[in-house]
Amino acid sequence: MYYILYAKGIRDKYLNHIYCYATNNIDDFNYMSPFKRQITGLKKNLRFKSFQFISLNNSRYMVGAAIADLGWVGHGFFYCYDYQHNIVKELSFLQPFSSTTQVCKHHIGSSFFKKASFSMEIKKSAQQRQVRVRHGRQLLLNASIAQTDSEPLVLCSPTGVGGWT
Image (cartoon, rainbow, N blue to C red):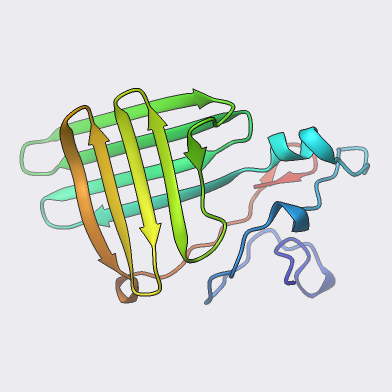
């Protein structure tokens, strides 16, 4: 297993990857306290964060959609900026304890978020990503994105005293 924080035995701040990880697994996540003690169990689960983010841009729209499992809360957000009319539509919802939030830990699978009448789903296959966002009866986004049109983005950045995101 390749560990993102300890590549080649050193602790890199920023890593540039040309491939996507096969899985993002909490069992391989080694979380330490600022005092260098290992954190396990419920505390580890609440500190493990994962997310799926989709960004689409063309000559008329800029769209962003994300599903995040922050451990203690699930977060789903959608925004769409219309360049021609200078209008932004933004929706953001939180779900306590990530109860209706699932972020796929593999490069193929499904992620979803639901809160009241807002729902978002991101389905990943080897060839494409299918993104659907609904608010009430309104379908805000129904997009298919070919995998050849995008590259994976892996970001690792320091947070707090000894944490990494």
